[in-house]
Length: 247
Image (cartoon, rainbow, N blue to C red):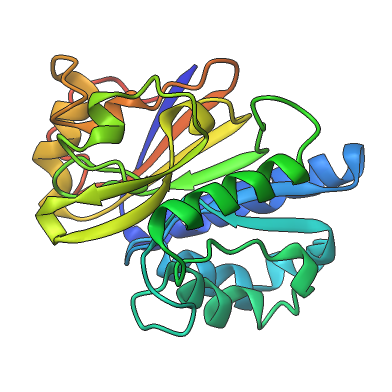
């Protein structure tokens, strides 16, 4: 099931995403005691993490019963300015006093292949099912159509059926290595939410959602949860070219 929601402003997208995060986490914690979420890096979700840390709507959430993971990471140490972990830690995890045992960062300081193997094992150790099934995975989308670190024409995209949950992916466009969830792991989640804002992404978003299926060119098209929900939360500028009717 795919749900596309367009909001007038970025602020409304952020608020809606935060409220959906809080309500989903509260419900799963009530039923099962633990909520597992994989977060996204990049600039788009930064206001979301700040909102979750600061807004009173999250004050009653059992934050110490949430386990935080990351869908991708750069090949950098945790204190590096480009670290996705560092971005979330200072904006959300530290303010909400998340216990260290609930924070599962990708060890970007290791050799990329070793980091991917280590993180895959950590995920497998934390879940009692195969494939591991996250309650929620938050994703963004780049202007090139990538999500997590699934970049156009890279190996993990051209060979998406590889038998891995986490992999090292060399990204020639950035002359760097990334560690990333594979499409198989993302598509096993109960909920996947894309957060997409800004007019620079409008044309790509149109191609991803309404264009032909070209996943090697637009890797975000690979995300199709097998037994879960897929939601796109979009601001007016990013969604201005879409013709699909909105619920």
